[in-house]
Length: 256
Image 1 (tube, helix red, strand yellow):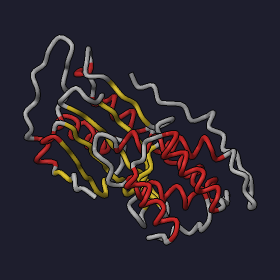
Image 2: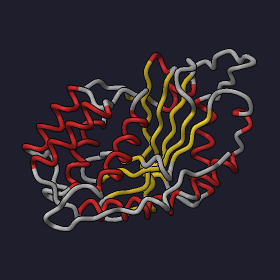
Image 3: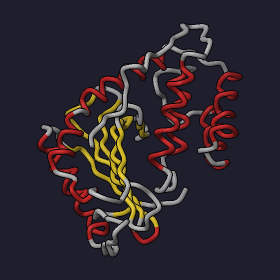
């Protein structure tokens, strides 16, 4: 897998592109400061922060794990994605990181928002980011509920193969290389997720494969994967316990 790791200092020192009537760039440095300040004002304590980039920093991702919003298995994670080449909109997202494997989980239905680099994007106020991050505790509890629901759904090898096949052939956001990683993990898992044969274990095999996705695709791939598993959790016939997770309460946050 490719290493797209970057440092905070590297992203801060990348020159901001020229502004135009239709393009309003927001600097990586400003996003770093807004996020760190928002996390602090929300009363959260940062455990780790990590950055990745491509195209000499023209596309960048940031992830911040929170030490005081966690349970025994996972902790809250706040992230953003930004670009200087007009290829991607600015996105913020709330998710989790699994302790044992460092896999990411990003839920786009109740924990993400995006903004095109046009109009008043440069007027993003620090209070806007703080207010958004303040909602992260509720998002974390929703993700806990979904995790616990996934653990109660047993999946057979055939059902697992059908779901993964659909991810690859129908949804088309996992690569052939990632498909091979998932297949290998299904045969011999690198980590013990304490939920053998469950939908939660299968979900983690997928996010394990997505861990080092191309920075341009990392956030969207995780959001799509999470949505796929939530949407299909009610259709899996489990010999253990059929479960339909209600997502009606998980609406996207309207920040702007």
